[in-house]
Length: 482
Ligand code: 4AD
Ligand code: MG
Image (cartoon, rainbow, N blue to C red):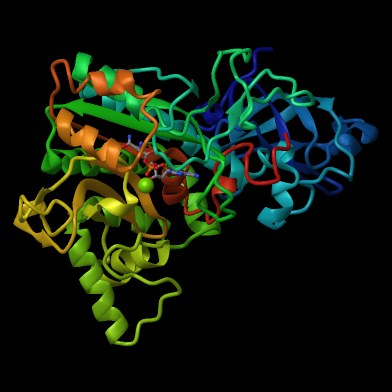
C-alpha cells in the first residue's frame, strides 16, 4: 500500500484505508489497547496509532519502542481522544528498524549540550525537527523574496585568493604535502607548485565577486557557505555558516536600509505565515515570548541610528549606572552587549546602525565627506547631515533583539581615487584585487549591499539560544564531527 505523509493524513477526512511510516515517539500499552505516537518528520505533529493487542503478536508489540521505525496500515478514523482529529486503527504493523534502549534520544528533556554530542540523532527530536523545517522555509523565503524583486541568484567561488573582509581569518586550501614544505630564502612557503599556483583559502564572503555581478546584472544575491577561522567560541559564531549577500547597483544609503528592513521583515512574516505549528511548539517549549517578538519586529519601524549617536546613548547609560564589560568610546567596535542594550533596553526595537568609524570597517566602504577637505582624517559628515568626530564610512548594520548584529552591510566606495587611497592607506596587498579595482575604472557606478548571517536569522526566528543548534552539523573550534 502506498504510504501517505503524516502531514497529509492529519488533513484528511476520516474513512478509508491508509498507510503511514515513521519513527515511534512513544508507545503506551495496556490490556485492551495500545497507543503509538508516530512521527515522520513531515510535521511536528504525530499521528496516533491505535492497536488492539489481541490482534497483534506480543513479540511484535514489544519491538515498537521509542525510536523504532515502523510501517502501519489501517483505517483512518475520527479520534475520540483530544488533540487530534483523526487516528489510525491499525490492521497491520511492520517493524522496519528496531531501536534498543541504548538509543541516545530515548529520554525526553536532554540538554542541548548532550544533543550536540549526538548530532546524528538529534534531528529526530521535536525541537530539531521544528528548527530544520523552519530553516528550509527561511531559505525558500529568501529565494522567493529576491526572485520576486528582480534579483538574480549569483554563484560566487568558495575557493579564493583574496581576503574580502581583510580580517585574515581564512582556512587555507592546498594540495601540498604538509610533511615536506618547500620554503624560499626568506622562509616563506613556495606556492608555485601548489594546485592553483598561489596561496588560496576558503571564502569569508562572496561580496567582491558579487559586486562584479551587480555592476553587470543590476541586482544579484548570493546564498552559500562561508568560512571563518575566528577562534570565537560564542553562541553566535560558527566556523562554517551560510550567508546571503545581495548587491545592488544605483542604491544609496537610505535605499540600502529600506532593503535591509523590507527583506528581513519579509522573512519573519514568512515564518509566521508558513511555520505556525513549529513556531507554536518552540514558543511553548523554548521561548514563551518568541511569537510575540516576531510579531513585534513586523510592527516596528527600525530605528536608523548613526554610530556617533549610539555612542552618546551608551555613554549616557554608563553615567546613569549601567555597567558594560567592554569599553564603548567613540572609535571602539561595539560589543554585542552594547548592541543589545540599544536594541533591547533603549529603543526596544531593531536598530540599523550607520556611519561607523573607518578604523574597524572594511576598505571597500563608501567614505563620508570630511568636514574640512584639507583634513581627511578629521570630522566627517554622514547620514542626514550628522557630524562625527572622526572619519566614518557608510556601513549599515542591522542589530536585532536577542541576537545583536544580524546583517552587516554598506554602500561601496565607487570612486577610483578614494578607493585606491584607502587601499594604500591600509597597505593592502593589491595583487589579488586588480579585477575588483577594475570595476571602478570602467563604468563605475554607485552600489550597495549587505550580508545576512543565515544562522543568526534562524536563531532569531526559532528562539534558540545557541548557533550550534540551528545548523544540522556545526563547525566550531575543535569540533568538526559528523
Ligand atoms: O558583517 P560581515 O562580516 O559582512 C560581510 O562579510 C560583508 N562582506 C557582507 C556584505 O556587505 N556583502 O558578515 C555578515 C553577517 C554578519 O552580520 C553575521 O550575521 C554573519 O554574517 N556572520 C556570522 N555568522 C555566524 N558565524 C560567524 N562566524 C559569522 N560572521 C559573520
Ligand atoms: Mg559585521
